[in-house]
Image 1 (cartoon, one colour):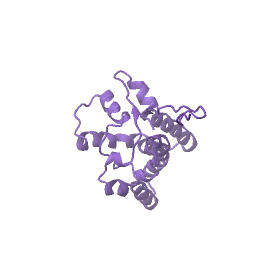
Image 2: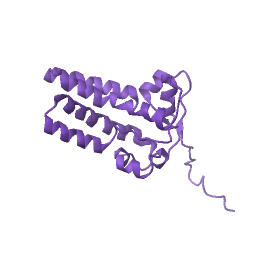
Image 3: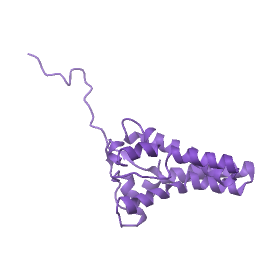
Image 4: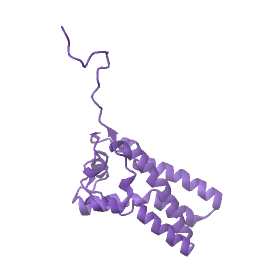
Length: 182
């Protein structure tokens, strides 16, 4: 999902949770798990991709255009979600329960909206172990071409995210793909 999509859905969820519970801790945790979880993209961009252009537009285009070669994404994993849920259960931490709720919002949205770039879907991608087994190689999960985001289209990319490249149109006229017979 696009960063803007996560921002909007997380803000709406935070408003509902705060209105319903009045808990600042739960709402703050939800914001962290629902939106701020994406900070791991910045870590990957700098540490594993060795990118040095830290302008927001360059960073966003890098991901939206599908240029990442490695996806470590330590905060995007079912394993972390399970561990945090266990710690929240044991400790009763409201803030941590909020983070878990935020992840439960964030990860499925990523699976659904980013899954369009992978013919096999992305449910398995969000397992850290699965990503580690293939050396965190992005090309092992996504295989569909994207339409490049041009310079100057930051807000559009922020809210719309990546787009699939247009598939070649097939002629569906009956007999169009068959050779002429004499």
